[in-house]
Length: 177
Image (cartoon, rainbow, N blue to C red; front, side, top):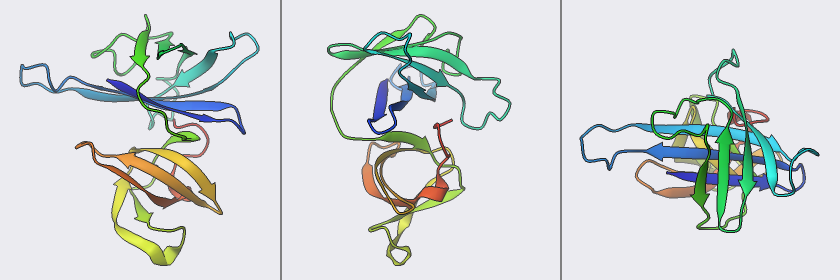
């Protein structure tokens, strides 16, 4: 289990991806789930809290939209969702969960790919396309934005991390939902 948390100081948006995986449970069955969220600090929130919303990326009906809160603590992040979510078979976020803080990096947003393929580019230029790409619903962490291009980091299922540029039009606009 883990959380990738992003914060954009220019907009005040907090966004992230909660990943669950029980592949090490020893019974041969494997279940994994990613839960995406976004939010802002509201006046009614405590100083270290953010009101968040989470939803499955392809849900156009808003049926899976769930409100919740994220609280930044000294050495952890506490996340609670008001209703059961799509990952409830792995962890009950209705009662909240603490995630340890391990590594700090500067990401301004967590987003989801909306196109069937989003190719990586070595520099923000159409002539610099690489063979590798991410696919629809893959999460990316955005480091910076430049003239319609995003400098992103992606971690695949094998744990290999890649940092490159993608076209901004390939991600879901606004929230990662």
